[in-house]
Amino acid sequence: MICRRFFLGIAILSGCAAAQANDYSYPYGSSSPYGSSSYGYAGQSGAGAYAVPPGRQIDPSVRPSGWSGDPAALPSQDTPGWPPLGQAAASPMPAPMMSSNGPPLMADSMPIRPQDPGLTPLEKRNDSCWYTRVDYFHWNERDSGTDLVNESGPLITVGYSHRFDSQRFRLEGFGGDVSYRGYLQDVNGNLEGDSSTTRYLGGRAEYEYLIEPTSWKEATFFLGVGTRFWLRDLRDSIGDQGTQSYGYMEQWLTIYPYLGLELRRAVTDRIELYSTMRVGTTAVTFNHASIMDEPVWPKTGFTGQVEMGLRGSTLSLSAYYEAMTWGRSSVVNDEYNGPVIQPQSQMYTVGGRLGFMF
Image 1 (tube, helix red, strand yellow):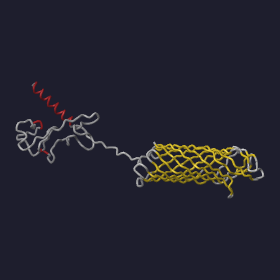
Image 2 (tube, helix red, strand yellow):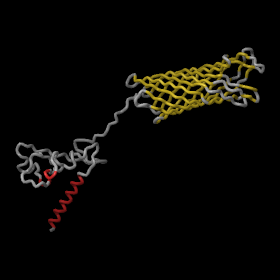
Image 3 (tube, rainbow, N blue to C red):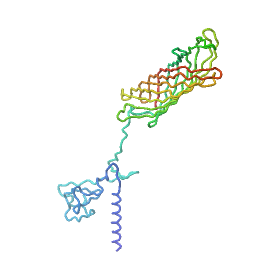
Image 4 (cartoon, rainbow, N blue to C red):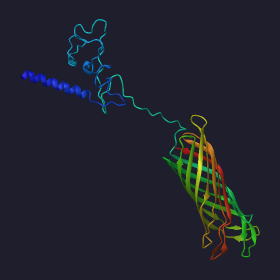
């Protein structure tokens, strides 16, 4: 009785161990390292099928005479007279190695995991970019077809843009001194030519939503809205006829929606040619001069921008053009200056841009 219980216990433990060894989930569509968790021979089913445990391989066309169907009773390569003449003994399956985070692995193989195909520098869309621009700036004011003010000179811009998913933000700061050529006007409306300098200092913020069609991978459409704020500081001067003039400061703020398109084309595997175009409107604009009590509101105008250049994985170099216009404002009756207007105004910027992307 003791011996029977002992051998019965061994048989039960062996059966549990075999069942546990077959109870694994294997990745990538393979049910086990041995090809099948049932160990049945292909093409055989029902009462005629018999199982082969791990580590045993025999020719299914050869059955040992008198075999009862018990897998444990199959002969091994150490059994005298086995295998039959003319049939080579099959090598035992290599013992499985235990993986630290998954099912057993074959000793001579590793699990196949999908590899990151990698992206070329042209396919990468850098998340952030610092850039600087040197621009030639021109400002013009006119009324009834007559030029009243012309300003021109260099402006320096430093900017940062950041993209995540389908959104992009942009911040810029700019400044510089430009030459001024305009007129002085006395209380009787008489005009006198005047030359001096004007200092500009300002910044802008923009938000864009990007649309990248899968059928046109070289293109990106975008919808955006921006705001541009600047101080226009007109200096003291002496007119062409010796009249003393005292300067003042203007504050400008404009909000402009726009839409645009970016196109890209590979030049080499590391450099691409790109261009961006956008158009919009200066929808709302505020202008207040320090010598006035009331602000004026220039009417809606046009804004457009074009940029074209070369871009690599970390650097970009491009040419840049931008225009903004505003319509003549309505007349404002100021407490100190009487009726005043802001004439039709336009701004043009041409320059070069150098960017560092990361």
